Image (cartoon, rainbow, N blue to C red; front, side, top):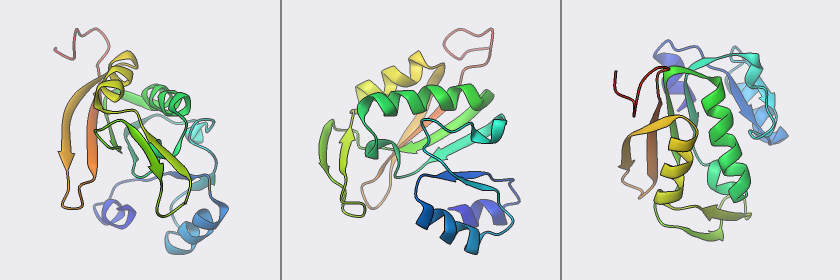
Length: 149
């Protein structure tokens, strides 16, 4: 994903809590700033963005941390900024096949509630060929009602 975004000419900043993954990222993308930080406590480089992507992250966090990250992302996005993240539509828990950590999906209703409570409107949801679910949310512009202008 990072390669495709960089090839499209987008400016990218990255964070990851894994020192191993950060080192690998730095090797592959030497020109992209990256920090080794947890999403729920990061300062996100002290910047504001037009978009944020969290693929394979939220469901690895505790339910309260998932809500915290959604709120933090709302705080770093500009009005009408987009937030794309992956999480199952069904609520439940399982052991992640890659990290071996417990994963938790809040389920579509709770994710949508958390997004709305954090100043987003749901733009769309998607499912890819691997049955991964994507939530595409837009930060509501200041001075609008329900995202309408």
